[in-house]
Image (cartoon, rainbow, N blue to C red; front, side, top):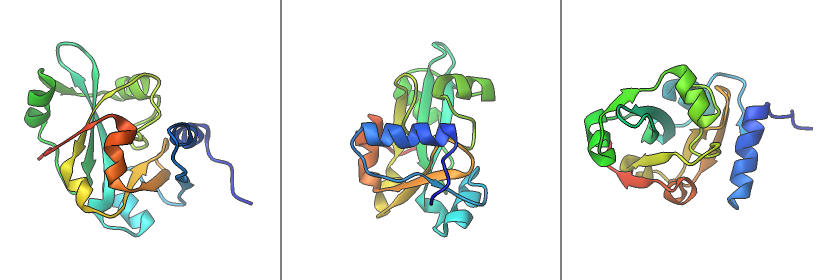
Length: 159
């Protein structure tokens, strides 16, 4: 019998099912908080980790999510050009308020309200990627081609 998922990981599982995906959230024995830790725990390359990074619009205060390949550093200026305003690093309280999840466990789906999302084009070269699923120990695997559909996000170059 499988162990019950923590409440926040269960919310991600339910969000995936609500959008018609039969993907499975997995609780890992080791932390998946960073892209490197996730890749080590899963046994995949860091490039296959779809890391969720939340920013805050400097003028509007709106959340802006970037789903990037684990090997890439997001160019904030590039994202700011796309959003039309400068970005600030999101504080932990803002991340939890905007997404319902803690840093290190923010998934690309399952938010209380829609979040503007930008997807790293480099993720799409992989046949599968792994994303956080609500806790720093939960992940799910998906075809990266599904990311724009499930997030409503736009694919761009983020580096």
